[in-house]
Amino acid sequence: AQSVTQLDSHVSVSEGTPVLLRCNYSSSYSPSLFWYVQHPNKGLQLLLKYTSAATLVKGINGFEAEFKKSETSFHLTKPSAHMSDAAEYFCVAPPPQLPNTGNQFYFGTGTSLTVIP
Amino acid sequence: DADVTQTPRNRITKTGKRIMLECSQTKGHDRMYWYRQDPGLGLRLIYYSFDVKDINKGEISDGYSVSRQAQAKFSLSLESAIPNQTALYFCATSPNLRLGVSSYNEQFFGPGTRLTVL
Image (cartoon, rainbow over the protein chains, first blue to last red):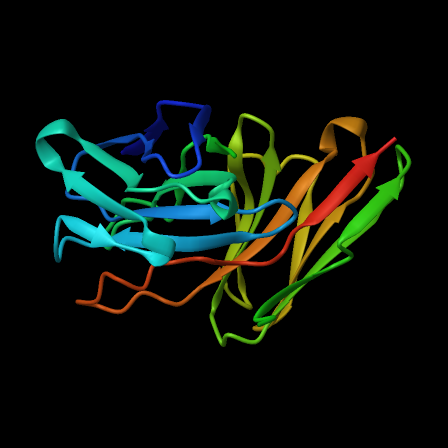
């Protein structure tokens, strides 16, 4: 079974300061993991994805995330927040390509990022 | 681009009314999904379909039904709407699995339908 936990429901940062959005996962096998962003009144857009090729993953808009198996974490970071980064962020575990493991995408409950001018 | 479209974008209706939300996609994907989003709960899966003849219930299918009219179309119906079905509804698509390729399980989302049931 898999699960994804986003540790903060709300994060507030000042423009120009670093962003850290935390995600922990629970899985009995090596997972794939995604981060999606949802801007107001928009659908979800893929920011980046980890698929075991490299533990440090770079995404769009300057975001990156590091897969740490020892900590079961996949935290999203950005060195310098921009006003346009204000949005809802979701950590997601897709279904694995293994028999009898189901087809469920596991969504975290989301982290709302506020960027203060 | 408008690879996954949803209609209507907003809808207000009354308790007991039948409502249909429609989703169309031009991505050529076989897999389609319906989710609802509620504040603090993330996205929850209502139904999913892996091809035209394959329909599966998700974790919160009660009170909903779906129809996969074609590969590109997947509709969600609320037979008798109730106020706790007020939510943001998303349609998503994903490509079929291929052996040995792990990087394409990504889902592509429509812009959402905001439904209010009074």
